[in-house]
Image: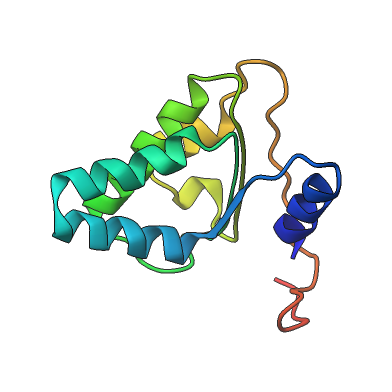
Length: 130
């Protein structure tokens, strides 16, 4: 819900972006891998170059190592281009993530990166506090 609100505010300000649920991104990367190297390259490039990208609820499902590697390629590319903005939401603790991914999420090249721990806030889906 938070990620959707951010994107809606950007759309209202005429600064749209790309929104994708994490499970959908992983499914797309998995399918592209099975299709062809060119399809995988196209899928990765689409996420690498989006001006503003929101990946919502990342790691809500188990992922295969090759998909995690492609996700790393996306995040690493985005980290190295200061013009690209990225928001990732997840309920996974940073300590449980692949170290390379956590490092990219925590990188603060231009002083604008931040991590917000929203644990203790009730889920908008279930109302349960975790």
